[in-house]
Image 1: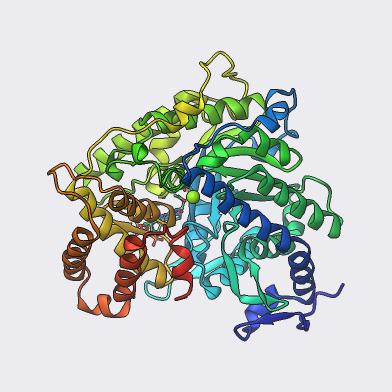
Image 2: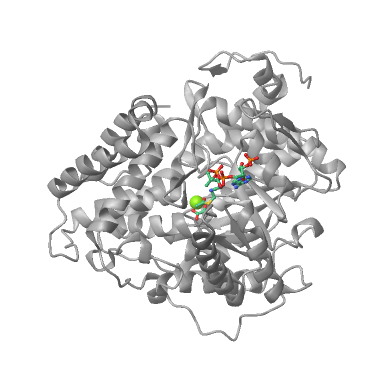
Length: 533
Ligand SMILES: CC(=O)SCCNC(=O)CCNC(=O)[C@H](O)C(C)(C)COP(=O)(O)OP(=O)(O)OC[C@H]1O[C@@H](n2cnc3c(N)ncnc32)[C@H](O)[C@@H]1OP(=O)(O)O
Ligand SMILES: O=CC(=O)O
Ligand SMILES: [Mg+2]
């Protein structure tokens, strides 16, 4: 097949392609998008319906549990395919959106891996995503460079940059700018096809594969769908089985009960699981939305020390090591401060969080900012020394972790300050996301799609269950609306009138109001948000 661009009849672009974007949508790319969409979209649509069916059972009182039908897989003796050498050591991974400057900075940071994010850290604007594909193609070719238009600063790759792993979008997100047979192409499928097509050759020349993170799975059948997609494109492009190697984020509550099954479904393509703790907390709220006894307290107290989160991390490690897979830790949302005393406190908190992860048995972990690398490297070295990972450390002797442990209700207060902070954070994040920025610093923390989801669903859940704040006031729609008006004024003061007007704050306020006061929980804030992009 020629790789010259020639639009096919079956594929409709909502926007005219720029010359640069045409290099991404070659004739071959277009044909693959049509073929794989036709082949895999119907099954994906069924899987998304199954999510709703499962949620109905939880809304009717059932709790997630380990499935009887798959006990054989959980109890069987098997391991995933051997992990490629260049993926065995992942002590430290930095993450960030697929922006050109960030990619270069991340690949040059003192980390083992850069997770380039089409998901939580990336607002899915058409321009941002397709430019992101160009950026990652150039990064894998080793010829990425950038000049900052404001500062004039030049950016180029250092020798031996970090390993690049791309995270595709979640299965729920459509790509409305690209239609096949009149319907949007699944965003995740598009990200995968383009990333595979434009990078498999440069990766193979390095003796490496196409490495991915797969987010937000809710069922092992979804893992099987991905497995089939990977195999199909490998075969189509005559690449060996296992060219794609993925790490799956366990970041939904239903998925934690299916970790063996997910590893098994993807055993020829997977290398590990990751504790995506922020989406996991969001999913805990979402899945248990109807369960009044499991409503979470203030976001600030839902740390990895909460029993349900500790059980999740420990079970993930035990499961992975039993199957020869890496057990990756998650993101401490702290970012460095310019104030040295404040920064020392932040580093202390990051160190404590990472000590907990590595001492539990994680093989690596995430940071949001290069300034955290020395601290976390130090912790990794303490636990792993010269070992690439601690898969050899069996957790078989650890106590059983039960469904009850994974679902344990949390203790902690719901405070007025917690509620007001949730409102300000969600408002500012949604405004940033609508303006094309998927990850922003807010009040000293990294905020992205997953953390913002916790803020807004917490309030929704408090309203639905009529929970009381620590001062005795019941959380109602009226109380929320009063606070939203007040906190919007605070944010307007903080950001100034010009930014408030130009950066979608008014739209964000309306959207936050709608999704927080609706009686039906909005599945993802990015779905109604996407209508505005
Ligand atoms: C829940 C989850 O899914 S976690 C995964 C998704 N989230 C992420 O990926 C978060 C990634 N982190 C970030 O996006 C950023 O760190 C932010 C937005 C939180 C803060 O960024 P900034 O405000 O630019 O931070 P700051 O001004 O301190 O940056 C200093 C330098 O470090 C760079 N930097 C900061 N974070 C990163 C990063 N994650 N990767 C690469 N470079 C980075 C900046 O580009 C800047 O470079 P420059 O000096 O060349 O201009
Ligand atoms: O993707 C990571 C998370 O914590 O969510
Ligand atoms: Mg996530």
